[in-house]
Image (cartoon, rainbow, N blue to C red; front, side, top):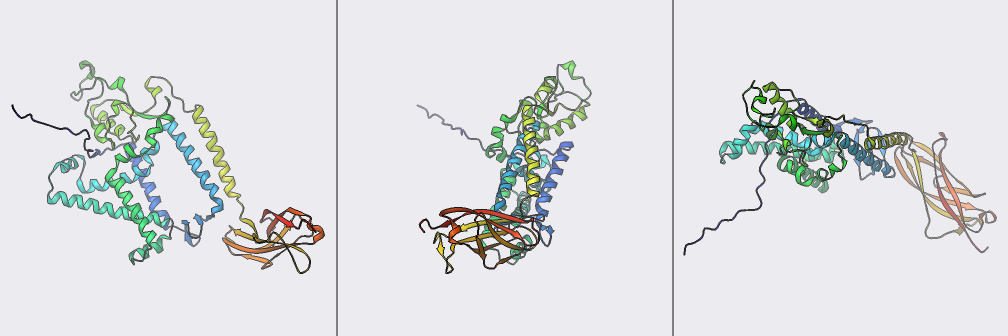
Length: 461
């Protein structure tokens, strides 16, 4: 009896590191331009000043959002929801027309990965050298290159975390306190959290975020149709694949234009082969288009073997951008955009909320008048100070008394004011009556705000 040789094979293959080949072309330059613009805006905007303060600051402790001279309050939360709805519709319409354009050019994962990969190329060299370095044993050179790369990654990630927190805490003060080691606990936590998230997603995980973590890739097909622009391989022109000499007519050997060089695969940041058809891993970055066009140029073939096109165009049919879904998306988005602009430009600069005294529904004053007590929350959203007067409507003979009688409201301020409404017994009625508080600027009469409440009087008198 002989011993049998046992062997096991793992069902789970280790994730291979993808090193995308460098390409140069229209889409690559466009992608770099988009990344530079978006990253430049992200890192620069917190440092801009507007009207003596940070141009964009989401001041959570003070419950104020400053956006280029406009201040939004929690009462303006509807505008945030409005913007999110518009952004979702814009994403849906863009996807219906041009596929995963967002993923390829504007997604934060793509944008930050672009700059992290550029740093990697700076330290580890171009495509072939990175592949060789990955396979080499650990030497002093490899350690130095890997350490240098990750050190710069960490610096960029820390700067990213600092910038992110700088949108919520004045970035100039934040930077001074950072170098003085005087940061608060939550500020330190969010700088570290966002910095490490950037380092992990853009530096370590990269394409795995798009392939395994992002839900958008899973439901994008629901917004595609045969008229959607996608990155496609023209199989009718490219097949059969095969190598050949430059200048040789491939038709004499029964070949198509694809020379099977695999450069389109090497250039893909997610490592897919676009010749196998559209796959959910494809982020529509068009690196394969630039790579294939460069090969076609060297071979003397027409460009466009891999290109942005539609399924109908590949079948020789005309494509339609204007179709029911794009018309519906565009119409709704246009209406919401116009409404948003009109609404935010005409939003009221004065607001009042009324809270009744919960200790007593009513009381009788020393003068024999029926009295109800309220607290007025007056909000001045304007950047200018205002002098306000309070009146009450809806109840004959009603008089409102506030302390002070005339409200001096500072710019962009919130103030609580105690108010007493006094009504003669013969005009107070019985039970509850609806009244209306009116707060009005003593000079600018058009600046006014009103809020309804109820006035209660005794039932048995």
